[in-house]
Length: 155
Image (cartoon, rainbow, N blue to C red):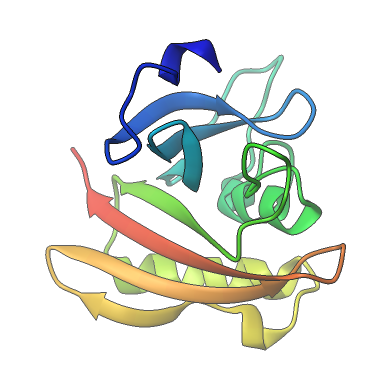
């Protein structure tokens, strides 16, 4: 990654559309110097409808084409510069309708609909003007992943 070669190892930067495994990209890659240290996938709640040619599904935060949590579980997201899995990664939600509790309940139902264990549901860390949740998942390769969910209201 030549672009980052000139940065001091103590500098933190974020890069949009950061490469992950294969042709997958993550919305935000956080670097310390040239080392990728954390990745964040961003979603809008509710999921935009898409078009007739490319419809989108409401449960995209969890599963389906372009899904957030599913891509972490499959190993397509949440890896470092050498494709080794991070134990912690993040999800960012831009909430446009309803409140955080509504979406926590909805996302937790989608996790069950995706045939995941109830232990993988979002657990509240804090609810205020922003919301934070945490969830734990077993990846397909058997490694464990902790997802930090950061939600903000947008208009």
